[in-house]
Amino acid sequence: RTLVMVFCPELGLPPDARASGARSAARERLFEELLEWIRAHLGEPISLTALEQRSGYSRRSLQLAFQQRFGCGPMQWIRRQRLEQARWALLHPQPQDSVGSIASRYGFAQLSMFSRDFTSHFGLRPSELLRDARRRQD
Image (cartoon, rainbow, N blue to C red; front, side, top):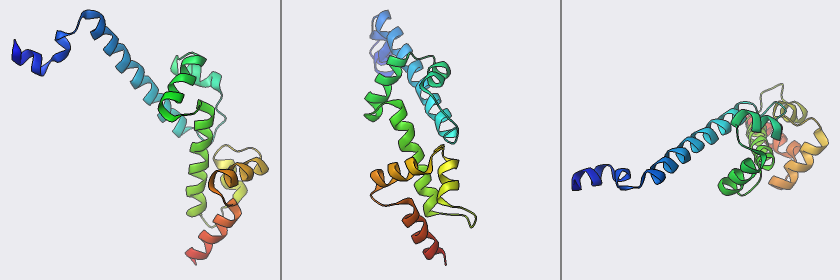
């Protein structure tokens, strides 16, 4: 009996607690799948409604899950991910890349908003980062 409890401690839990743990693991798996989907679709418009439909979470549950995990709401997290990806692309530009093409690639419809958000987040303009990256490539 002791060995069973050491190797399978969940068997010592009441049935309610075991079911709760299974639900929690399933919710975590759904959340991870949602994050993967978001990362794969950063260049496309993503709405909170789409996240609800994709995950099966309610709007409030999504807000809480992102707040607990990342300290911000889902749309703020998506914006951060887009900015991080754009920063990487600006640091490693292809010859045909421009600030506008990179902004568009990561879902920013307005170049001015991208530039403002990027500068606010990283403390320098995207055009400066791209220019410096091109100098290093030469």
